[in-house]
Length: 157
Image (cartoon, rainbow, N blue to C red; front, side):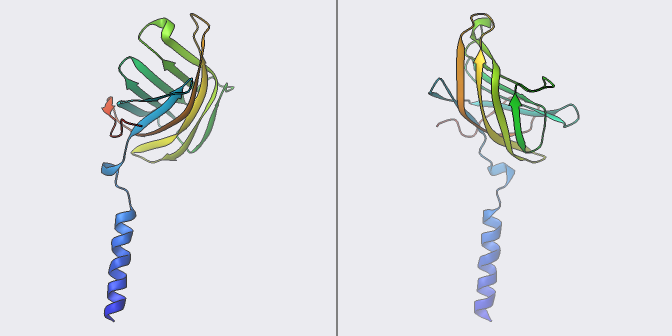
């Protein structure tokens, strides 16, 4: 009987330790620009249009990645899309020349709950001012939904 109780207590302890609480959630947004690894230190995620669309923003210094997605469910969202709702971009600096709007790419949402969103992304961006191309690859994110630009909990690669 003691062994059964001990086994049951071990199972319950394992069950509670394996559940990740939102307070313990590592938040981050990482990616590569033309092969150079980047990570953000400030994050913003929101549900817009009555929770039917989502937006994720990652910022570090003057660099920024923005993902506006025509959905808030798990799945892959492509560019170009027929409805022109999906919009992805990379800003290398605060000038107009430093913004690269995505011309092709995708975002895959792997997890979405009431409190956070997680997934991957990649896209090719083009500067409308200079015509230069930037390739954004290996993008990954986990962001809590919030109404402010919050610090990331994981800021190193």
